[in-house]
Length: 308
Image 1 (cartoon, helix red, strand yellow):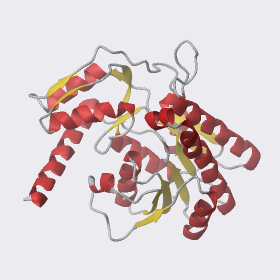
Image 2 (cartoon, rainbow, N blue to C red):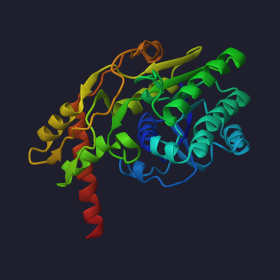
Image 3 (cartoon, rainbow, N blue to C red):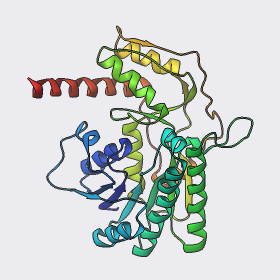
Image 4 (tube, helix red, strand yellow):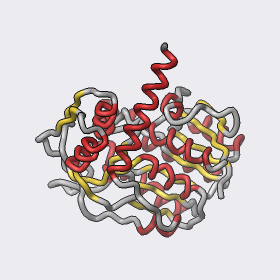
């Protein structure tokens, strides 16, 4: 097991939840990001006095990343740093720099330090779809490119990697990216606000606590090859999300949308991940939404007490 884990993109949504999970398991975490604002983590747990080393590092800076990895000597790396769909659309060059060059820099740093456990986020956006049978946005193209780069790093250098494709992940702290609308709807319901989902779709919706546990288990495991895996194949719809919200908050004012958002519905493969971590249990949508509502309300109550 990797007792010391380096996480890039540590101030992000998945970063915060994965840090929380690793710390809960007693592992030491080196949390690195371009910024040092850990409000998403603080929405889950107070910043600990021990076990968490916060470092500022830009994954596009190869020299700085190599120095950090060499100095801290993690047993494994979880690479989460990436710009999301809107940022990649608005600034393609920066998106490519962070998402592709940053990915290469992480693999190079791991190779130089002899680290044989790199777990990284790909995305459902990398999957082909629509008339072009290809990713539908630059973010997906960048993620697909990173999958191929990882494959070649195993072929050329023997560097093991595990690329995980989260789908639509929801939970406290998901406030960035197009599909953050699912979490915004849950937050609005929890806090008594009205909200209309901007799209409807059928897809795989995952509670963030499940995804964090998967990342933590994966980086503590051993494997060979450049593996690539979905993390679920359970397809539901935004109607199911709305029903779960209304069950958790009966008086909620959350509406759906008639605008369809295309999402892959078939071709999911979770077997590579099962080879690494074995079986896992998914949190059902009703429980995941209820837990998210509860945490939003707890945080709101805490902020109210602090402001009183």
